[in-house]
Length: 225
Image 1 (cartoon, rainbow, N blue to C red):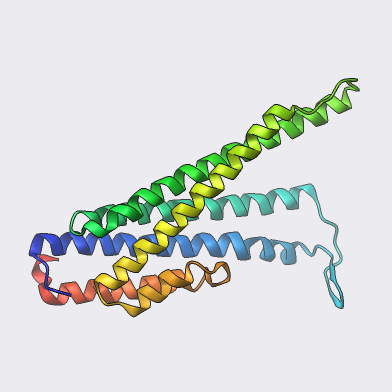
Image 2: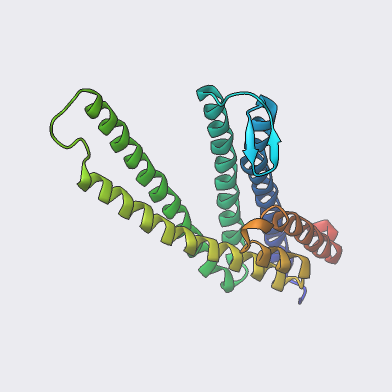
C-alpha cells in the first residue's frame, strides 16, 4: 500500500476505527442473540428432551418466552447498529477510494430490506391477531384477510432479496478494506461473514485486522493520525 497523504490518512484511520466499532457491536449483538436465549432456557430450568439428552424439569412459561424474545430483539438491534456503523465506515473510505461506492449502495439497500422484513412480519402478526379475535367472536365469514397476508409475504420476500444484497455489500466492503491494507486477517474475516456458523469468529478477525491496519497507518506519521 502506497503511503497516503496526511489528510487522506486521517480519513482512513477514522474509517478503520468505525469498522472496528461495527465489528465489536456486531459481535456483542450476535452473542446476545445466539447465546442469550440458550442461557435463559438453561437458567429457567425448562425441561428439554432430545433423543438421549435430557435437562431441566420446569415448564415453559409465557413470561419466559417473552424474556427470550426481548433478548433476541436486543441482539438484533445491536446487529442493525453494527451494519449502520459499517455503512458509515464504507462511506468514509469512499472519500479516498472509488472502490467503496458499490458496498455503500448495497448496504443501504440491505437496510431498506431489513425495514421491509420488519414491516412484513408486523403485518402478518397483525393479521394473525385479528383472525384470532374474529374467530373467538364466532364470526361466520372468513376471518383471514388474504389480500393483506399476500402483501405481507411479498414484502418479506422483497426484504430478504434486498437484505441479501446488503450482506454481499458488507462482505465486499470488508474485503476491500483488507485488500487495501494487505490485511489477510480482515480478508478472512470478510469471507467468514458469508458463513452463518462462523458469525462469531468473523467480527473478531475484523477487529484484529483493522486494529493492525490502524497501527500501520499511524506508524507512517503518528503526529497526524
